[in-house]
Structure formats: C-alpha cells, structure tokens
Length: 594
Image 1 (cartoon, rainbow, N blue to C red):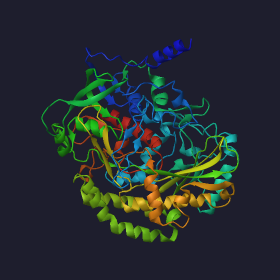
Image 2: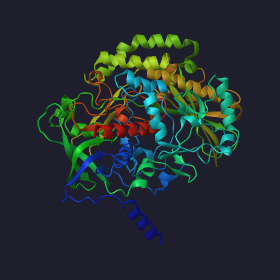
Image 3: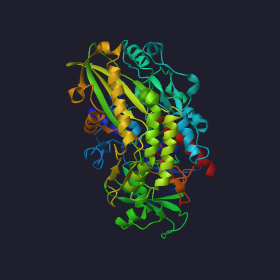
Image 4: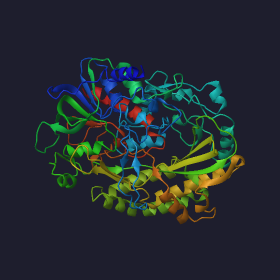
C-alpha cells in the first residue's frame, strides 16, 4: 500500500509537466529558464493572459510532498540531498585557500524550497539607491506595492505575541500568493524577554516589524510558511500549484537550457533570441522556440554561465572555450557579492523547546560607537586601493574608477543613512547532552567583489564560483567587530545569567585577543551565507551593468533576466521577500512591453 501511495504521489506531482519529446519542436511566446523563486512568479503572472503561451524550464523535479521541504522547524534537512546543487567554490585565496559549499535549490520552486524561510525586506535607503545609480522606477515606493501584493500576511496569534512576535499591519499585504506567518512552534519561555533586555542594554532597540523599510533593531522575524497548515510556503506552492492546470502554461521538469538560439549567427547590436536548446536529465536534446522573449531566472550562480554559453560575456573568457561572441558584455559574471557566516556558541542552563527566530540587525553606531567617524575616514582613504584590487581580480573587466564610485554609494548607505551592516541571530536548543546557545552572525554589506564564470563548455560543467571572502580590510574589520559584539551579548546581563561556558571560539580566542587572533579564527570557521547576488547587475552599461532598468540584457532585443543576479548591491534583509517583489514588478514590465 505504501508503495502505491508513493507512486500515486509521484504521478500527481508530474501531472502538469510536459513529457520530454525530442521529436516535437515546441513553440511558445515566452520561455522562462528556471522554475524557481522568480521564474514561477513571472510564469504565473504572464499566464493570466490566456492568449499567450509560456514554457518554464526547470532542472529539478516537484517537491510538493517532500517532507524535508514542507517541514517548518528543521532547516537544513534538504541540504546536501538531490534537490541541492551543492556547488563547491574555488579555493579562497584570502581565507587559507579554503573551498566552501554553496547550497542552491534544484527543484520546482528553486532555493525557496530549501532556504531558512526568513521574510525580511531590504532597508528603504538601499532600494532607493538602485534608482540613484541609474535605474529609474526602482525605489522603495515603487517596490512596496509589490512587496505587499506578493504577500498574504498572517498576524501573530495572542500566544505568539506573548512570546514576542509583533507587526505593523499597514506594512503587509493580505491577499497575495505567498503566505507569511510566524512559526507555529516559536521558542517558548522568557528567552525573548532576556534577549530584548540584553540588546537594550547594548543600545540596540526593539523593532516590532523589520518589514517597514527600517531593519535596524532586535526582532522576531516572520517566515514564508502557512501557519495554519504548518507547511513551508515555497514559490511553487504559492505561485504554481494553484494555477498548474492553465492550458497555456507548460513546465518542463528535469530539463535544462544549454544555450540561447539567435536569429543571426553573426555578432551585431540587439541580437534577437528565437529559442533555446533544451537538454533532459539523461542528455536528450530538444528545441523550444520563443516568439516574444526568453527570460533567465536561473540564479546568480547559473545565469552567467547560460549567458556565456550563449555568446554573451567577456570575449577573453568566451575565447577560452571557443565560443563566438554575440554580445560583448565583459561584466557578465562579475560583481558577485555574498556574506560571510560564522557562529559563536556556549553551553546554557534551562530547557528550550520551539523554533528560535531571534535576530538583531545592527549599524555602525552599534558596532563602533564614538570611533565610527574614524572608521569611515579610514575606509574612504582606502577606496581607491579597494577598487584597484577588485579591478585586478576581474582581469580588467571592472573599471576601477567606476568601482570606486559604487563603493562610495555603499559608504554613504552605511555611514550616513544608518543602514544595518551586520546581523546576529540567537538560537537556543536543548538535547540529551544539555542546552546550548548558538549565535550565527555575518556582515551584511561586503565590499569584496567576486565572480562566477564557466569552468567548461558543457552544460554539466560546474560554475567557477569565487566570492573573494575576506578580500578587503573593511570586510575583515566588520566581521571581527560583529564577532566581538556577539560575544558581548552572551556576557551581558540578563542573558549572561543563563550562559555557562563558551564553546566556540572558547580558548582559541581569549577575551583580550587582538583583532588578528580573531581574524585567524574567523578564516578557519566560516561558510557562505548563501545570499549570492549581482552577477548580472541592473546598472547602466557604463557602470558595469548587464541589464537595463527594464531587465533587458544589453545588446539583445528580447532577453531579460529576473533573479538575484540583477541586484546591484547586497541588501541587509534576506533575499526572498525582495525577490518576490522584484519578480512581481518584472512581470508588470514584461506585460507592458508586450
């Protein structure tokens, strides 16, 4: 009986997908490459018009009934499984040549099926900066309706409010596809009160709702989950399954786009895509024609590779793989930005049950106090050398003068607009061996720029991922300062009353340790934060952009990108909420252009 049920579930999850028929050349109006967080939003919105045909190409399968996905209290169950790409980075030359694993969703719904479900929007000033850098129409006020329009917010219950959950209802949507709720199993007891009082003692205020455009402060965050059903709300569950029976929307599962097909095989301005070469999981080939547009939504770590295999990118890189240049766009794959994640831990007294969703977003005043201005002046004096180092790492693709200007924008956000620069989580758990407090933390706005490029010409060749962690002094200084603040939290009353012995870094980093000792420990004990952005940045072309404000790839007439690769700067919230909002706006842009 169990085998029959599993078989039936497998049939149901594939009921709306299209069989891979190599003898059939399919034709659509829009072909969306990637059925993840952004691709499914666009597919759902475009298919509202019954007169257009949409195809979605997804490398993974449906995970609608995968318990590792639907579980709301056990983050990490899917990591390292068949629905995780689990890429390996290049050795990090600034961090002991350590290679790190990059988790990325390989399923219908993309990374929204394996992430931590955190719903935390960007800082208002950050989104406004996109417009100031040459993207008219991309600002907080224009994006807020899409934040709200994508969301169906479930206010905290009385029980959740007692445990610390709060909200500003005016900031949230109540009828969008993505259900956002507080975890039904919030950590019980008085831990929230202890943390709130301790952060207050450190002059970090309580923030009842970080989704208003002001992220700074200590908070309990909501998640992308259906609180009533107690199930993860990923992009497929929110945007696809409710409309999967639309006859004009076809999803090709377990399939990947090898490259874009062009109407003219010679390089020229504004080349036109006519379709894509599709490859199944077992290597079968097929052509999908696109009458209107090809839309890339394969993420920051795959979108550059798809562009490069299609002849869009830096000619010096394309030539290495004998690929003809269709569009000379050297910044494809550059501008990679991700955050460095480390954790401090200690044994604790008490019994803890429930899911901890405590976070504090802190700014430079919180980290550096009265020395903030001195820190700012030192950074400003170093910007030319930072920009030169980034340019050198890109083999000249990045203009140092342009990069210095972009870094100055980040300096302004950090030191003049109080944008949070670090996040510290607080998790408490009990088990057979006792109770523990774990404080993961990361700098939010790194200055380092890395890259993602092809490692080979074949579709299964992995991306060459190089985030350049710890590349620049500011990033190192920020991570050390955040580590010190995390330790200070554990040793400040009243939280210190339940903290016993520090486990990590423990004696490796004495309490009077120098910054160099801290840095040595950090370089040996870090991972990516899995928030990679920027590898096909939405910026003017002369500033290193790959796509226009309309998300169209420069030099093409009908190829757009909508995924995290277009975000020009890191955001201090978590990516998912912003990606949903951006994808909603992208769908409107595409509809208007039709």
